[in-house]
Length: 336
Image 1 (cartoon, rainbow, N blue to C red):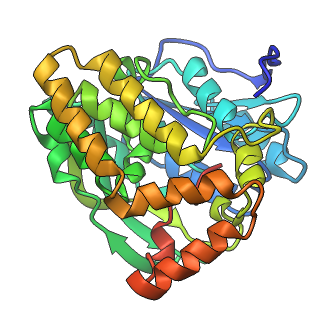
Image 2: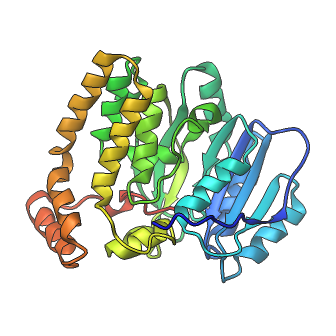
Image 3: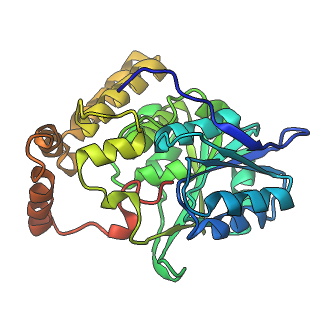
């Protein structure tokens, strides 16, 4: 990845006044299809002490027009447009820098939160000051808003007092990344590396947060994820995935899974002071290699740049022997 200095986003509309309790960051690129529904869901919250910050990654469709219209009508909306397309990870992270709230949440342009999402999530975090994130059940919807499935997303180990147990609850659960779209305590979020620029960067963030404190789960489907044909996960090549996360990723230098593993080690070394707890975390990381065939997946990713067919072949073999995951819950498919 190039280390050149990035451009700061162009500020189009900015809010003022006292900081809100909640900041919601909406990263988007060419989101005219579902953008209005996502914005309406935020502005229609029963909890009103919020700001909505939209980071437009140099869209070429009607996204800017839609966002400016909402910003003109509601002072809680702040709209920023990048001068050039930077990629998902820098766009996500810039929203945290712009946020002023005690709590923070990312929302994808094609997802929706129900009217009581914030009031119930804020109440959950207020009741449990040591908790670092509140997350809810997930209702998966199709392109027209019809329900496809309901996912509980409870992650029971993440509520435990011991950091190593919470860490295991994330690294050994294939769907733990969905907590990435929970409501974060900003103080804890800013102690992480935020969204790293590779496929799996969301998992690294969630795992780091698990080391910092417990999660709290709201047992209601207040967050709706949209399943539609234009999601991120249809980008199948390593180069395409890398560029989606960060436009400065001009070449493939490592397996994303191997990079994730190194970030998990960094999280343990940085945030776990007790030696025995660190050793328990490392034992879970040793188990990680066999979990979901991660060792095989790393090997396949390392040869993909010279054998682009490797990932597709390995996936077909895995599905033949182990069946297919529910596509509606595929990793990172709803971002941006």
